[in-house]
Length: 104
Image 1 (cartoon, rainbow, N blue to C red):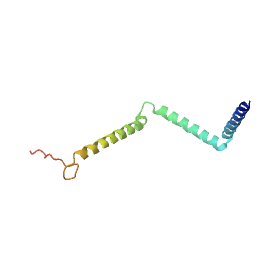
Image 2: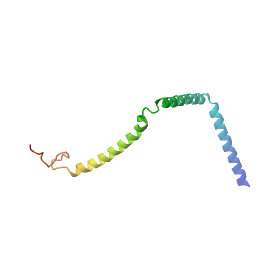
Image 3: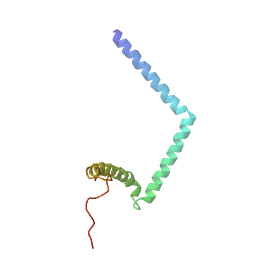
């Protein structure tokens, strides 16, 4: 019986806290002003996207492309450091080649 009373008391306290937060957030003038501005910006964005529909998908794929290029760059850089460290010559210069250029 004591556990049931404790559970009811905790539930009532949580419900009261949630109600207070909801009412406080909905009556805060600064919060409602920000929400109305956000709604206006979302409407403008939606209208702009509808106007530009079909013209370009560049901005939609740009972030994905940047991530792919970054991943490939890291992969190539890791492979490049392994290759240059294995192919360094006695001069200590990793770009130096032991082969001579072809004569014409």
